[in-house]
Image 1 (spheres, helix red, strand yellow):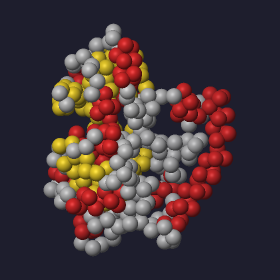
Image 2 (tube, one colour; image 1 turned 180 degrees about the vertical axis):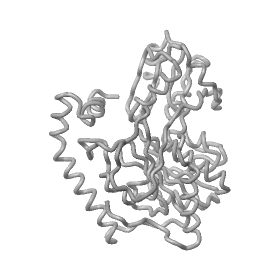
Image 3 (cartoon, helix red, strand yellow; image 1 turned 135 degrees about the vertical axis):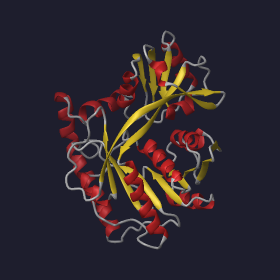
Image 4 (cartoon, one colour; image 1 turned 120 degrees about the horizontal axis):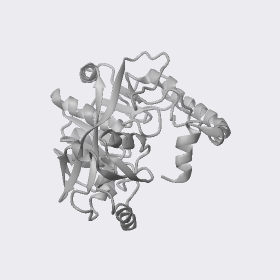
Length: 365
């Protein structure tokens, strides 16, 4: 991660130190202008100046208010799996950030990946590896929903869809990680907390045992969630195989990550009694090159394991690391009241299928 981005995340957004507070004050007027623009956009949807496209399938969105680090993608994966267990045939639809594909693309079907990371990005391929159903990458999410329908799916789980107002949805689940934060660029928020009025369910994500605090007046039901490591993953001749987390105990490890906020990743590694002796933190969605691999290999010669994320593994697995040395940490959410949350989602899906309210609830933020 670049020094500037690290400074912004760790000091400006957190208002740490004199320099961080001064930088936050300098950026605050821009955040005010950004907030005005966001409210005008939301109001335009509310009064019909902007209109959301309606998909033929019910759409369930998983999103958040802030930039990165909330766990939207693993939560979308969890929700899609729960809907499968209820007899549904969901498709996970996401933008495919970093991919070159211009058209809606079927990333995976029934556990088989059908395209490349260059075409659809790292998150899409990771989901394709993990999910046994359909995954679609589409810059226009409405096109992705149409492709999902053609694939025989009966509901769309929209990954990172809360701000994507152009596609109407039948249920909005919003993950919240911070209650004391500013709008971009002085803080990580893409929308003010008042946008939670559009939510059908709010999930407070606890990090390090702490939640986001008071959310104010939220009409939607509120659930609690934590993210925890569930396994290690090794790529063996292109196939992902799980390994026990106990392999970390007492090992000297290097971490390699290209994610928005590597802090929770490092915390999870330490929880399994591994000693982190080298941290290589790169830009979110970093595209690894041969030069990167050589540098990583050189810096990690003296460690027992090179530990990364599943999102990074889809790009690092093509390089010749020593066998059993490169592993990814698999994480999943634990949702308090998860059954009730899935009940709520299924009720919204049923209502949409019966011709009830179908589409974006045009509440202003």
